[in-house]
Image 1 (tube, rainbow, N blue to C red):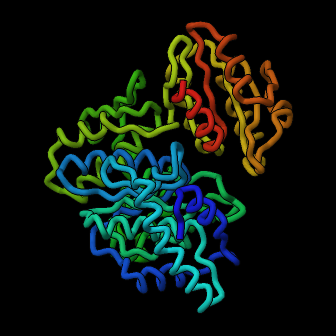
Image 2 (image 1 turned 135 degrees about the vertical axis):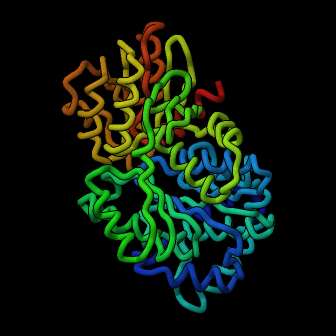
Image 3 (image 1 turned 60 degrees about the vertical axis):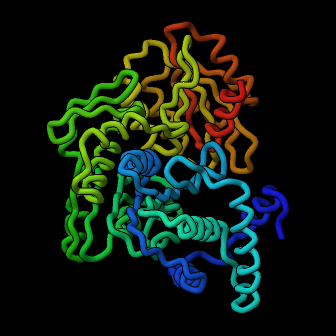
Length: 415
């Protein structure tokens, strides 16, 4: 029996799977035994980057229709509760403890019967399904944790699939080529359903062929996006209609377009004004988030080469003359390629590290840049130095790792 939220987290994070997941039998069996098979509509989202932003746009559009929208995302930036939401309300600590106590008893019984552990991600997802069932939601927006085909969320019968894009990340699990990674993401597309996507042109024939084989419909929304302009928001046209999204980045036009099309699929009669209002009232922490002005300080959780490329393209459009980059990354990421790409916009680098067992030492970054750099191991001191050395026309860009951004964001918000 858990009496504090810290006891819950300590238990959850220590529930590690005994072997690599090879099928969805366990999560399917457990969900059926706990009577958690959903009866509400489900939008399922996979992709290398942009899943959270797309999901958040869609949630903020659909909640304007008066419906109760369940929301499951991973990982979190602000707090664990961020993973499970209904409309704008995070699951509370008290609710987490209530469901965790039920799952604790069940998981112990399950282990005794089958000598198998229900791991962290599956327990968290089961908690979301329990919360959604008790609150009688109308629709759930479910983000994959990793991949798609063998992701625990993929046992669900879904109504619409969204694949934001495909890039190089989690190669040890998903494969070393874009085609191999796409194979895992495409696993969320079931026979006789619709998938919305913004994948690059070189993968479109693969997606079309896959959809044809299982009699599904593949819609490439990116071809309808045009006239992207970045300022304090992202303005663009979609199917010749002007839209404005609150999140700032080139790629946000495509994420927003996916949400527009998804909203129309779920609610065919939805009013255009509700869509526009939802896009302009979406907030997603750690994605091109401005946390300070004079100098401008932007946090962005780009943590792979695909995300960094999108970030660089967006910063180029914003025409900053002096970009100072505070960078930290985990050792298992392709930080060499990330830094080489960031070189295209950087005036200088400030390399640092965070307290994480997977961290890369700050000194390991220096050989991948041709720009001036400083190495300051303490990330608070590093950020403070970057800001002090900047001027009012500078941009201090903090990026490289979602965990890093999460740590940094807490500091800015507390101050």
